[in-house]
Image 1 (spheres, one colour):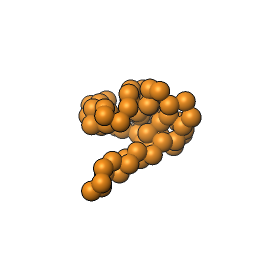
Image 2: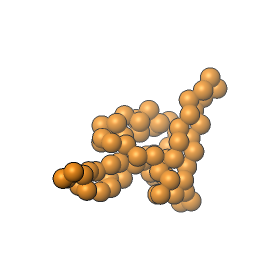
Image 3: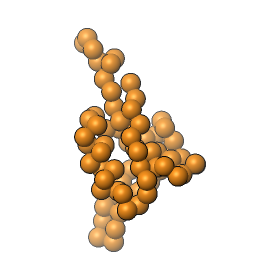
Length: 71
């Protein structure tokens, strides 16, 4: 399929974490939100920039997250 090699995806990175700064998993339960971090290879991928922004805004109380664009 033509053009699939140019598909961009996005991941979230914590602004102040040095060790394993990428968001790997987010679980919402009755006691709050659990955020699990990993390296770049383990990072949660988003198919659209809008989805990544939506999740980063939902997590704004838990740290400074910013988008990483990948190709």
